[in-house]
Length: 213
Image 1 (tube, rainbow, N blue to C red):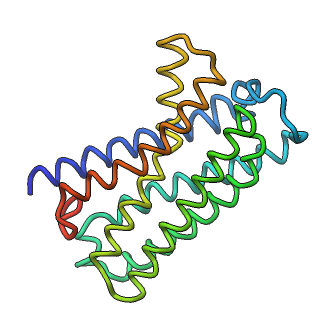
Image 2: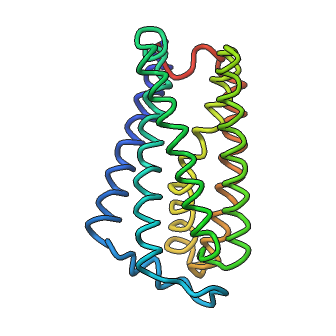
């Protein structure tokens, strides 16, 4: 029990720190994403910075909402003691995922790394939407254990961007790999991790004891 509570606190701390970092970096430090846009060369489509930035702001904002709302609903206290909040917050999460996927779909053709990166992001969007929809179908059928298992799989995708930037930093800054190559490798590494990690977690945890009571 104590271990589960500690794990939840660890995830909550990571999520909180990352959300604060993203909000400060994207809206205060570099609101025009000049550093990130500088790596987008050789694009097949003309990138319109103003439109791209608006879509990016929406994407980042709702990605943060998805991370926060998903985390709150993984507390079993939320389910057992605050059913109405849990249900409404679940819809907030699902709506946020949909918006993140749609905005990501717009930005995918302009992804750093070109077409291979675009394919990766489109693949991620399809997986995330299908997995989240599966989780919703299970709760509509009152299949609570299956719902929570699929929500674990869905929530893992909230960490995609964090993993991409972490792996890119390691490859580019620590190893010296070119930034674009580092980004592409990081993208596909993140895809593998967000698909595999939940399965490993579900094998170790009892479905009804996820994160904490």
